[in-house]
Every structure is written in structure tokens, then in C-alpha cells.
Length: 569
Image (cartoon, rainbow, N blue to C red):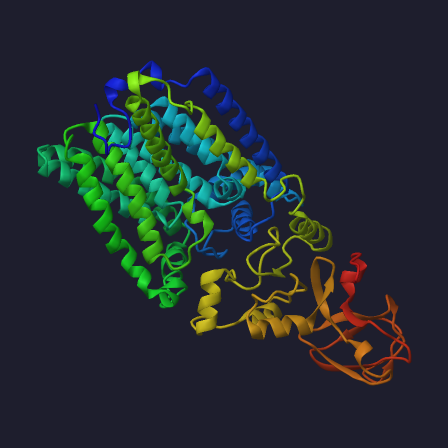
């Protein structure tokens, strides 16, 4: 009999009673169908997260022969974008490219859920594995976040796969090499892997230390036979990537973008919540005694040790994330959610077995095997539908890309926040994500947006947004005018707010031919003291327009944009 504190049932108790019953198979099938349906609907209709076009823009850069970091800024690790490049190249430049890109996430989800099942099956039972995978798939935060096109999907798939290899069999040298390779792939996909791997190392050291003190003696030779191949496997992929970027002349840029750029004193929670630093030390005071309590009675049981290792790794990652990561987002919990689901389901299964054994004569408990997980899954599915899955909330990004592909020409730069224009280069190197905005606010990066727009003679800009730096935002608002989802070079003279006949001053940054439009047609006032009759070439500097009596909604617009068929609003 397993000790009462153990999260699971004894190995001898496994067998037919741990296999899913007929009702459970039906329930699991319904949950799987519900998850697949919701994932299908959300893939088509889920609101676009700002990270998605940013990732897609970086991947598109690879398809154009550009090198990440050197030619296109990104502060994420490179593996995901390099893996996705051939597939995005097949999708091509189309307004619904993001929807197609989301379909590419399905294999990563399948691998994650399969790994969750395998870990649960190996450490506890087939029932635990199946219900943990099912619960994970319908958790609202996991379902919605994993639907999105983001590197974190590959990240969690690599991490859960490494755990599955580590925890589901004897750690031979070959298996250790594979574990190391998968951990290396995890690290090459996301910088947050530092926290995962550190949590695993700390949990492994504590687990082995507890087992050793409890009587499980192991030699240093045996330890090195697993540590050495694991370390070797870990460095293979990062070394190949570093060599490739060195060959492309982008190794320094890679190091800056992924490491130096992301380390900013006082960033986010580092400044606002310094007491968070105590969370991880406090977790040691809780998790270490828990590990001792769980492991001391069976220190030589390999299966039991792996359970404790998973428990400690799950707890330590959460504690490390909450303690030391400055910008915590929902995607940071993607690899943690399946581990937590495994522990919750295993604990509930242990409670069910305990209640069954406590009833006189082993009578059946008043709640059957499938009742509690089915009820919980139903609640999770209902919560997942809080964002109505069949309502289109991604139209804004689609309209933007339609306009980009219709109005702009290949190679024409567009100034936007993070690459949401996807298929066009940006005149400003840095993407305005969280760390960049913090650096700009602290004066660690110069605001060169206006200078770069002028230098590259950029004619298009994304809509006004409060996340543009103040000086850049003022410049863009003064030199660009809305044409639907995009802005085009020009200015709105706002003639409604002044008496007719009053001259209005506007600035031009670089020479172009401009048209003056009033109420949707050619204006008839005076431009720089001359009656306006046709579009004119305006030189850099200040210019004046004096509207005719009754002219309203006067705008000065780059002529070629009108010739391309843009519609002013």
C-alpha cells in the first residue's frame, strides 16, 4: 500500500481498475471533440494578439533572405522562426496568412498533450494520463493562448517532450542524450527556458539528495554517465545555431537582441514589486520538506522519485517565474499548465481511491470514477466559451493586411509598432514591444523613429497608437493621414475648427508630389500663395494652404497613394 501522503496509487494496485471504464471513454471522447471544435473555431476567430504578427513578420523576414537580429529585430530565441520559415513561405503573402499560420501550431499542441498523457501513464496510471491531457486541453488560458501563432507553442512541446523522455523510462546514456537535446531545443526556442531548466536542476538535486540521505546510495560514476550525455545533447542545437549566425555575421546581434536588450535595470516587476524576490526562497521552505515527506519512505523506488521530481519542478518553476521574471504574461504558463494538471488529477485520483478503500467492504463511492473529471471538464469548456468562439474578433488584422497588400508595393517600408504590417520592412530597427518601450522611456535607446522615417522616405504608417514614443507619435500624427486601416504620407489641416479663409501651416519632411483634397474632391484654395489647380511637388519645409469659403475636411495627401486607389476617411 502506498503511504497516505503519496500522490498516486501503488504499482501493485495498477491494472484493470486503473484503465478507463466505458463511461470514462465516452466522457473523454466528448471532451476531445469539444476541445477540437473550440480550437477550430478559435483558430478562425480568436482575437489577434500583438505577438502573433510580430512573430509572423520575423518568419517572413527569413523567407525574404533576411537574417533575424541582423536585418530584422527580435528579442526572442530563433528556433521557432527558423522552423516556421519554409511553411510560411508556402502560405505566401495573403491577408489571411495569420489564420493559416495558426494551423501550424496544431502539431505542437498534439505533442504537448501526448507527452502529458505519457507522463501521467508512466508515473501514475493510464486514467491519470488521459484525464490530465483532457483537462489541459480545455483549460481556457491554455486553449486560447496555444491557439495563437507564437514561439511558446514549440517551447512547451519541447519541454513536455523532454520531461516525457526523462520520466517514462530508465535514464540510459542514449535516453540522457535525447533529454539533453530536447532541453537544448527548449532553450533555443525561449529565454524563459532558463527558469524551467533551473527548476529541473534544483528539483533533481534535492530529490537525489533526499534519496541519498534516506538510503539510496549511488556512485559518482553512475551520475556522470547520465550528466555527461545530457550536457552533450543540450549543447548540440545551440552550438549549431551559434555557428550559423556567426557565419551570417549576426552572432553579436543575436547576443544583443536575446540577452543584453532584455536585461534592463528596474524593468517591470523588478521595480514595482521587489518583495517578489522572496517567493522562491519561501518556496524552498515548503517544497523541500514536502519532498522529504513524500520520498523518505520509498527512497529507492525509481517511479516514486520521478513523481517527487515532477512535483518539485512544477513548484520551483512557478516560484522562479513569480520571483525573478520581470514581465509575466499568460504564455509563460503554457509549459507549466500540463504539469500542474497532472498533479491535480493524480491527487484527485488518489483521493478517490482512498475514499473507495475507506468504505466498508470496499463498496462503491457515491460518486463514480468519471463523475468529477467530467463535471470539471464541462465547467472548463463553458469557461472557454466566455469569448464567443464563432464571433469574428480578428477582422482588424485581416483588413490591415488586405490594405497593405493592395496599396503598398513589395519592399516599401511601413512604420508600425511590432511588425503588424507583416509583409513589409520597417524603417525603424526596434520592435516597440515591452522591453523596447521601457528602454525608450528610460533613455537607454534614442527615439530615432522620425529620423528613420525621413531617411527611408517612408510613405505609410500604422494607425495612431499610444505605444509610440511621444516625439515619434507627434511626428507621425503631423505627417501622416488615415486611409482606412493604414496612414499615408500627408496631413489633415483640420479646417473645420477655424474660420474659412484662414491660412493653415503644414510641414513636409521630404520632397514628394502632393494633392490637396477638400470634402473628397480637389481643393480650390491657395497653396503657398498660388491658386491650387493640380497636384504639386512640395519641397521639405513649411507650406501654407488657405481654404476657399466653405471648404471643409481639407487634407494634403501623397499623390501616388490616391493613384493607387486609397480611400480617405
